[in-house]
Length: 210
Image (tube, rainbow, N blue to C red):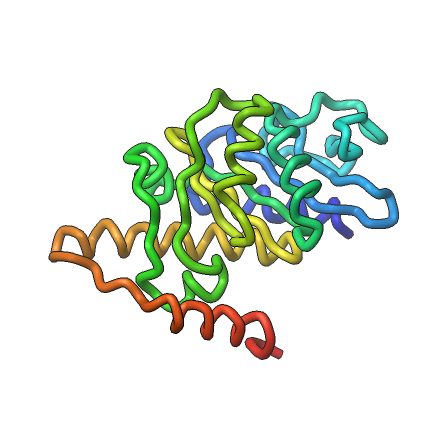
C-alpha cells in the first residue's frame, strides 16, 4: 500500500507541475521494515513501478530494491532520524515556493490553512549543495518542529504524519507562496499573531477533519 501511494503522489506532483521531468523525490516510512521507501534517481514518475522503489535503513543501507535511490536520500534519512513523528516526505520544485527559496525569503504566517498545516512561518534552510549531508542537516535545522522548509536556490520539502499529509503540505505552501508574492505587489502583507498561529495549529492537530 505504501509503495502504491508513493507512485500515485509521484504522478500527482508531475501532473500538477510541482516538478519538471524527473526532479523531486518522495519517501514514506515503513514501520514494520524499520526503514523508508524512496523513489529512484532520475526515473519518470509516469513509468515508475513498485519494484523500482528502494527501501533504505536510517544509515542509508539498501534493504530492498535494485535501483539507485534518489540522490537526496540523506535529506530524507536525516528528517526521519530527527522527526519520529514524520511518516512521509515530498520534495518539490514548484514555482512560487522555489521563488521564495531562490530569493531566500521565508513565507510568513499570512493565511490560516498555511499555519494550520505547516505550523507557522516556512523558513529557508542555509544553502548547501544538493545530495550532501550538509544540505540534509541544514534542512532539519530550519524545519524544526514544522512541516515545511525551503531549500535555498532549490525547492520545497513538505513532511507529515502520512504521505498524503506531506503532499497536502506542499500544495498549501505553494498556494500560500503565490498569495504572498501577489500580496507584496499590493502592499505589506498582514501576518497572523503568534498566539493565533499556535491556536489554529493545535486546533488542526486535535480536532480538524473526521
